[in-house]
Length: 308
Image 1: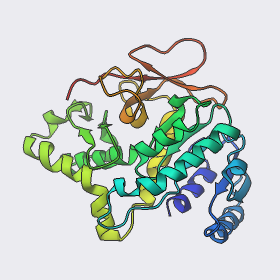
Image 2 (image 1 turned 180 degrees about the vertical axis):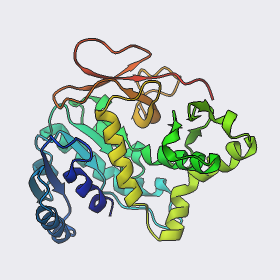
Image 3 (image 1 turned 30 degrees about the horizontal axis):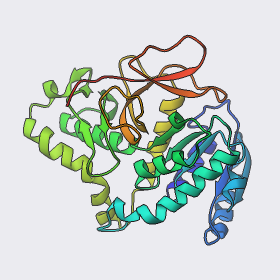
Image 4 (image 1 turned 90 degrees about the vertical axis):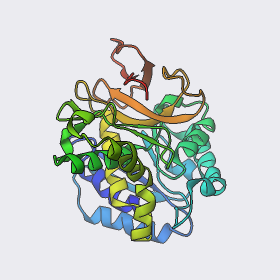
């Protein structure tokens, strides 16, 4: 369901712009192959001028060949009352195999966004099975949590969503995450100057964001799809577009060398910035506490936002 929403956004040019042709290579399973053929037919029939190729298959060693981006969405989904940890055994095997395939055949600068849950752990499993690829190019999707947090702050403050900035999700895409209202801003002002209800910020806001996904499953009977697809587009745009001065975005990254004292060798969401426009042949680099180096490469700073 996530892919069905996402693919048409990618084909339309929402992420890379109206001057960047795109080839979509869709990985399915034996059980889903017929449905995959139907999705490919719809993409072809939509006549997107930027969509130059749609190919499908069930072998990651074929589908991932020379890929510039790998959006790893397919995983056993959560159902009502199911925690992400329960999915680890099954999904860990999926992402180990996909990491090996990426390591073998993808572009040496492939950018990987892991969506399937538990996404932080799955991203770590994937990157550990891809030792020849830069660990800094692997991301776990926490943009949906950032979007959810921005939504709650905007509703409480009575402002439009785009007035919320500097929102950080610390930790995992799970109920253990910390949505950071202390460093977030509304119309450029600290949240606590605009929203005086400290109890709501410290309790209701945090709990609402942490449990939003589970509540949606109870209401909808399945995991979020459309909003997840939107958040993937947002995450990709943040990686390929210079971040507005003074702002940042949240993404789950490999922690080795981080400046916060977070445990090394895990994947953990923290604030990052994009400094220059994306170029496919240039690697994404995370530079703790350092300025962008003037060598033409694409760099990210992991930035200090203060202590919790």
